[in-house]
Image (cartoon, rainbow, N blue to C red; front, top):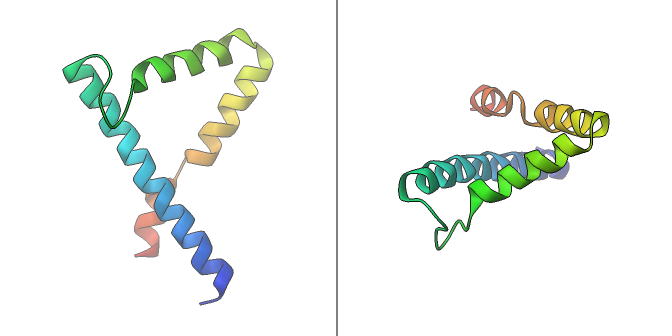
Length: 82
């Protein structure tokens, strides 16, 4: 395997791990409430992000579309590689 392919695989795995940690942080924040020691205040940060994207109108929708496009299919590519 070439070096760039290996780096791409490592970055994909890091993104997959971080998405799982974000989901875990959201669930724990809803269950426990407030700020968590390791995860911080994830729900407030995500709410602020959505609010900023929403207040920017069309540009916010375009950015949201790009983010969703980048994150779509991450788990299916990880399963297909194994």
